[in-house]
Image (cartoon, rainbow, N blue to C red):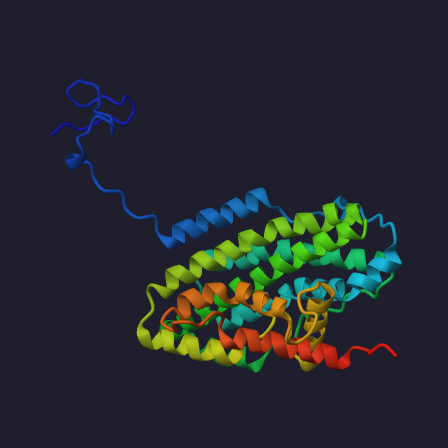
Length: 322
């Protein structure tokens, strides 16, 4: 059997090496499938290279009517800047929740996602302060007891995989929600004539969110294909009872999220058709993966119920015109 010389491309009998194109199909070795972990590692490296954290001073914060901007989108900026800045606490939660995560996960959330999202918060907070709104007050230290419990149980790898799947599903829904919100905010600012902040604050942020969404989606699909039926049952059960809108941990924050939807035109009322479409977009991925066996289901019920509750709480606390 001839052995190819690595340096010259010639075989050990002096003849030219046979190229892949010249090799008969039946003699070619089938290519190994690209592993999920390899795809994720490549994706994270690309995110780090192509999307470094956005410098706060790179934005043009000049505004035509800052008072109107604050009135129209103040609740949106306040909520979203807090959520973006709280990723610092989210990383602490992940460190508790996943005692032994895959290296690519930790590289993603600690080295790429954290600095990118933190800078999103800095940009939005700077914008809201220049528009005359108070500085953001993120909670960077409070850690729920449930994370400690799941982290302790997560020393059993089968349970940690359940926690990982919930992390990925939360990431998918969160990033999809963020993409939709930033698209709405971008268009709303343009409609107000605030082109500078739309183009240099919101546009760069929204360009980075789809990469995060793609990471969670690839990771979730890969892990789901490896899970046993009892693990999938636990994921479905926990997801049903723990789903919450992004950044909404208290009743007050649920109402604030409802206010964000109202100001972005997503939910004019708690029963608005647009709200249902929004829920379908947020829940589409997990509907297709977790609930494919439920024929006729258009959106996970818990997603729609959560958004209805947020919209209802916001409407309840919103001043009514005289």
